[in-house]
Length: 291
Image 1 (cartoon, rainbow, N blue to C red):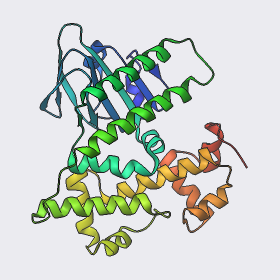
Image 2: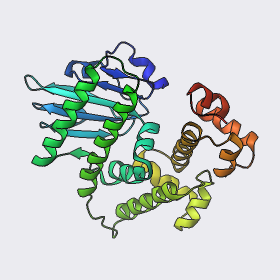
Image 3: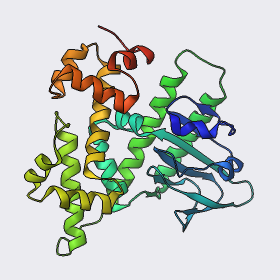
Image 4: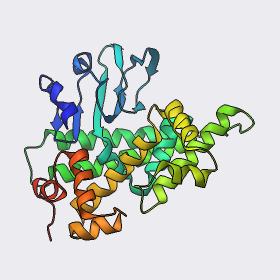
């Protein structure tokens, strides 16, 4: 990802084009995360950690974690003696692929309910201790043929266990207030995006189904998540395109039709704007199955 380019001076324990893992506290002070279009997991796996998140102070105990959306600013890191702090930077595309149909629940927890401070129970702490041990072992191994696939499998398990904790902490929304009604509207919008096969549609189409104006839907999305309704549609649409190009052997024409694009030419232009290359070139460069 282009947003990773500015981190060439940072030493990561693992890195590829979509995932970066750092397991030393000292690395945090050198990271500028405000430009990252990626999710971040900041976990304290030993000792205590204090860090400012967009200017607000947060404290993490052992095996507590923070799940952070893109463009989050991390400053003023302070750790107890011997603290172990792990940071995972995972592209939005990979998180969506790993969580699949459950990405809408993930986004709700982060943007609506803000249940992203993970405070595991005693049993869950044992579970995360096991993850940390296994992940550390795999990171120290010499290069192996399927190392990336194994790392992704471990991260997928961790993400789902984090999601389980986040969902169990979801509060009731007070729909009698304007803010509560807006959160419900945003949740229903994400649900539409997550469940709709053809996502590339006009904002007016979604707004009509939600019985609001397109301008109001965009206003609510920007207020709650910092992103417009159109940005959400593009993000979910691009995730679908990536999935079909990289994980199926369907032809470009078939994918174009399946995702509801009006023409192959329009689909090609959409991919060039999103990925900087044609769908055929994107598939070829990523080494996905071709047809």
